[in-house]
Image (cartoon, rainbow, N blue to C red):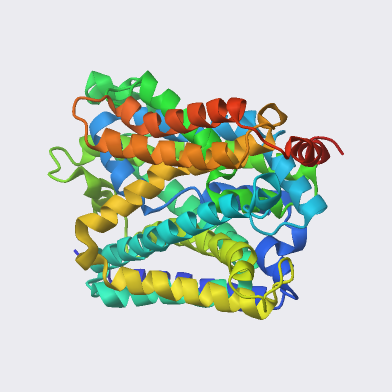
Length: 488
């Protein structure tokens, strides 16, 4: 079943809105600081919503929808709940540190402080590895949006990539972070409307508001359990640790939301808003997915459950709204990634390649050019998506595995407890995490919890142990840096 003209108009208006926001944001950028960190003037409510929306992608409505169909409530327990807890318990810690790093050291990239904290070589290893992996990760997400467009509209994969990637290229290049966060807000409103529409319509088909409680009586008993193997307590605890690191800055684009806040208090409020949204909103968003086995019994491919529900239950126009929300989630994540990666390239990599680009003095022109070129490369990779096959999937998996190992030296490096950990500890932790990942991928019989947590555990232990024995001549200098962000 394909979308009709009204649905296509709704989706077209959504894409047009993204371009209009990009043009508007263009006039809010006077220099690279405005472009990458909104001049440090990002309102807490906009930062919080952007932080929240940037953590989603189309995977929520495909892969997670499949798990909701087959495993029930546990998808909330190990995903949304762990993110909400991870963000809330650290609201007074890492968000505050990121703001102080911008104020005291004028950072615009999450990796800029690493040169002072460790050394240039450590910073460059982390910058290059992260940028190269993100190149393929973002390219794969453009292809994922194109596949969605193909399913619902019949447009070819290359055309779908051009539509989603091309429009994002325009508004990100024009508007920088302001464009990203304002489109995040618009996309959140679209997601909110679409999610509420689906929630209400599904409730109507289940007999009213009491359906929130009665669906569990119609589903297999394990669907109502907080944990459903293999997504058990151990898996959830592993994800809590991973999300603690990822959502406090391990995912660089999320660190940028805090770096861009005007004050420590604003960053803390932004974190609280994002955390609360993760605790509440997914309960509404996932409900249609939990009810899908009742409305769509014996579905051959559970990953299509949300799309099938949309086509089955919603009238013309509203189907387009829901599909636009699917694009909104993935475009929010990709545009957020691109803006931050461009900051890393402009601030951390290019000054060490060309003497014409001074550290800390990148121009708005260079910032826009970097963003354009990086986005264009991700689109080219998306065009070649089918040729990468399993290799692309492997690289994406590697990125997921490296979120923890890369985050360890970043976030632990901000804590006075680890002031003795130097470059050897940082690089060693990344290598240990990568080796552990390779081992887990080639071993049979490991639990899912151990498979996803072993790289992170290996990195953590390595960072601490090497740091204990490492002869770090810059301990006094590091202690001074850490003290400067620990207290005002």
